[in-house]
Length: 149
Image (cartoon, rainbow, N blue to C red; front, side, top):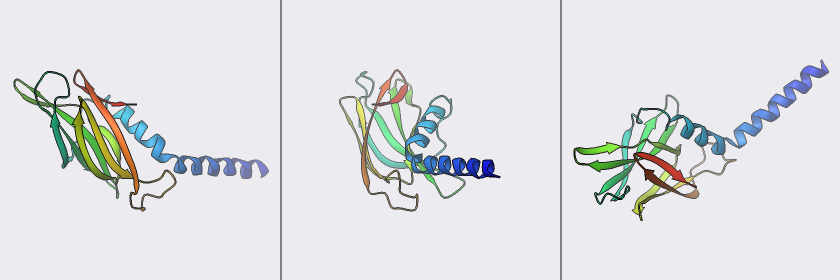
């Protein structure tokens, strides 16, 4: 009986730890999965687009945010770039930004994409309005979009 109680206590502690750190490990997990897929996000154009040269070829490329509604209450936001080629535009892989965030804008500067948005604290529940400012940087290498850390 004591073994079962200790086992349950350990599971509860692990569960609380996973919940408290979800804003750290969930985006990393999604980014590990999405770029390795050959599919783009089948989402809705959200906006916050900007134009500029992302791959050094002198042609104006575009970046934009798309959303994907989950089967639950989530709205997942992704950054994606569209590279201009001689035959039109080709999209890069999307990168997950967050669930129910509040995008503030994107810009292209010196070949890098700068994304600003509001998110929650790691300990906040998803019902909390986003209030923490976040800035992330991305770059295109070849035709792959990746985050600059």
